[in-house]
Image (tube, rainbow, N blue to C red; front, side, top):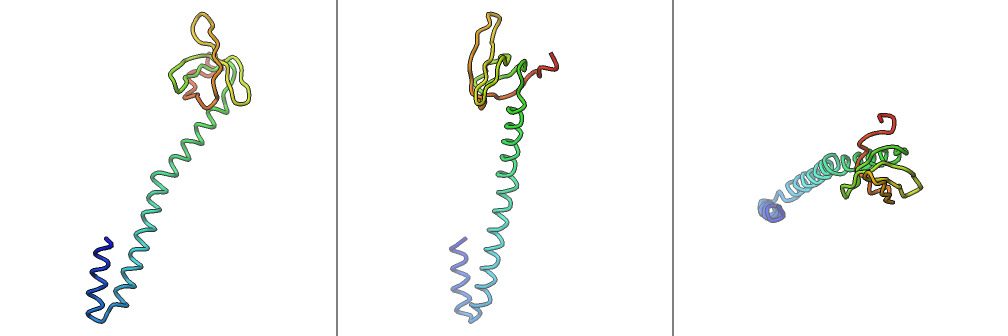
Length: 114
């Protein structure tokens, strides 16, 4: 694209209309950059922020008794919640595991549904 811009600018300079063509090309380049930034924002950045917000809301709504799945695939029932950690109980033998709140992938069954 830069090569085309330089070629057109050189041709316009030979014709004597370099100022008008260069200005028009500069404006169209700026408009293209603004459009590309807008597309990047609406298709990548904004949806990612929305997903992060939903995930944080899900993790903050966690209650004792909820059945969860961790990012590592461990399924368990929440038995206690502290600031940044959660204690879950897995299996029939009552194995307890302490995990980080950020390691929770999803809440499978809410405590009210049980």
